[in-house]
Image 1 (cartoon, rainbow, N blue to C red):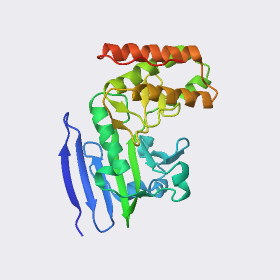
Image 2 (tube, rainbow, N blue to C red):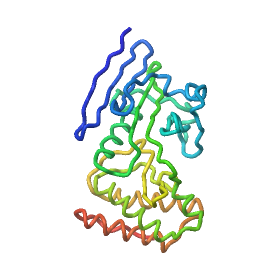
Image 3 (spheres, rainbow, N blue to C red):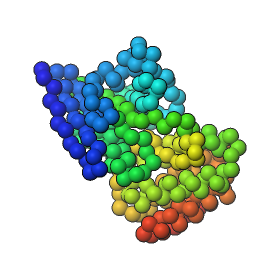
Length: 258
């Protein structure tokens, strides 16, 4: 059966090409400006491994690796966590295309990237149905040289200076109404120039201003405590820089601090 392709253009010129492969029950959404022809094989690590273009990357709940010539992209396979993983490692209940995790994350990333927020550019999203469930994958830009916040802190760098920049970055997302579902020390990256990036926006969504902003910072605090990296003075600096940036962007409620 012939593939069905629907092209959408976002504000700012980011093209998205949605490809429905009915015969294989695969559906692909991709940025046509970067990858003009994407097939289901792109989302299988064996495809890249055979071409010697696969490097496994540890960390996080999703299984993933660097792909492409020079490893310029990152492929992540969605895996379940918590009690749900006891029933299925990587399958999710299908409740409509718009609620598929990989597609939702792709579209949120596309909007944030277009708005100038520090996130990896989305390249392609995929899901494959089987009965009433699906499995999903996402390809994004690889941020060269970036390391998790946890690693940067372990290296003995100035914690207050780093956390201050993290506070400013978090405030930029919060001012834009972006609620990260799992803001932790491994989903915040520090690049070689000291820039702060956020990754893994699975289940993230846009929300009106409210107490969720502070709850995200407290989620990060618990992550740092669990890793033995919590520094009260550094975290207070994060909260102060976060609140100041929020205020400069139109106001907000103060964070509870350390």
